Image 1 (spheres, rainbow, N blue to C red):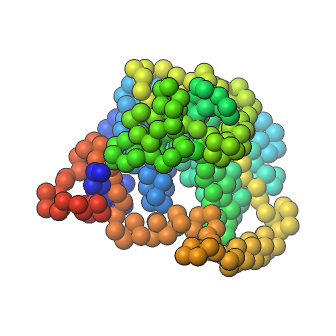
Image 2 (spheres, helix red, strand yellow):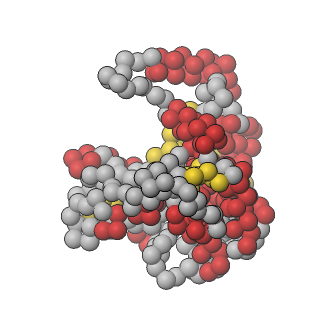
Length: 359
């Protein structure tokens, strides 16, 4: 198992910004991508954090993604809009879309925004979180290229297709759920491959369709729900496709060129996203919502737990990780560390799996 390099958050943010600007991203696009990657890296979603800078460097230099896009917002009704990403980094287009959804929700109670001509946007929770921090309920989703088998299928058909929800909690950090509809995200398989870590049982199959725990042999992911109940994850993947692609008329999962693993980094993938903001003031009212969230979260966390365990609300683990990483640093896998030019400390003793802090 490889030892990660621990990097102070402020330094990591600067390194990511410099790398994307060097690859041709404008300040707005680079800033949006770094914001989303740092969201993921800070809360422990390393599969969608800093490690993705290597991929974004490739697509910017290859021409698949425009470094300086002309993003346009088109209002289509009182509570709806469509954002044309102009083949931007998906983070840039998605943040514009969520900001637009929040503006619409302030006017109409709900803001629903589709995104067309976009690209990979990282962790969907980064955008749902924006709505929560604005006092609203947020939802964000996207479809992606086929790496997940349908229920009882032999070959990949859906993407990992995340669904993310966030809401104000009345506390310092929001209630946050960000989940792939596959057993694990593809980027986690790639991260495990870089770290030399085995996969859990029942999350991937090899080229022959046999279950494998070896990341380098994993060819197709399985849907969320395990062998017997993966019809649930497979159907939820279709929900992401419905909102992100079918509703917008963008690329369907099975028709995408691969995100990684191919030779083409110049052809735009024309991804779609969907973002939603809901203003509690237009329903039961903000005070009613706040009281309900407080009562719900208090009762949930007080629910009896299994021996040696703890009942957590969605987001509780992530915010604990964020606080810990602010103190100890963010772990960066060897491939990404090398790309960013991070030094390795030869004094780290063998067997130290905690890494060394670069501040």
